[in-house]
Length: 106
Image 1 (tube, rainbow, N blue to C red):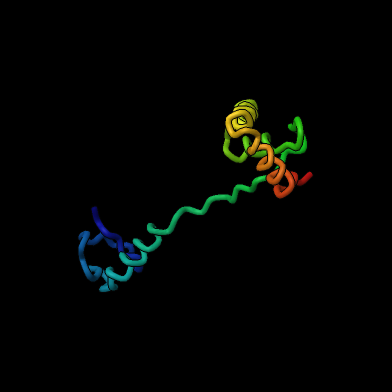
Image 2 (tube, rainbow, N blue to C red):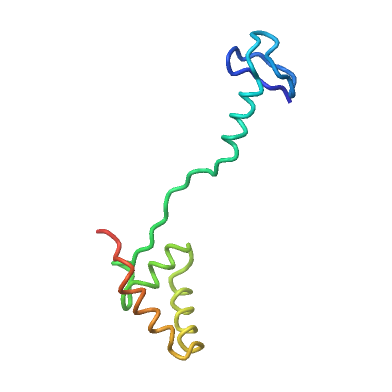
């Protein structure tokens, strides 16, 4: 795969140190190129909110479902199962989360 010079655009051998056309240092260009590839792609930040429109109690389950890209009904079923499995300890977690997580902006 040829390495193209960033200064003149000429194709060079893959491991060449200098451009055969203009003499530019290709090692620096190669290092800059690999540094750019190592950076993670920028993604939009996901924010966790309680839902205003799709709520049964506080909108927490709908907000969590939207955050994790899953069905709201499945999230609600998981909360109910967790309630019975945890011996109602999850109810305290639910109330704390509902108090801490803000409602989505209007």
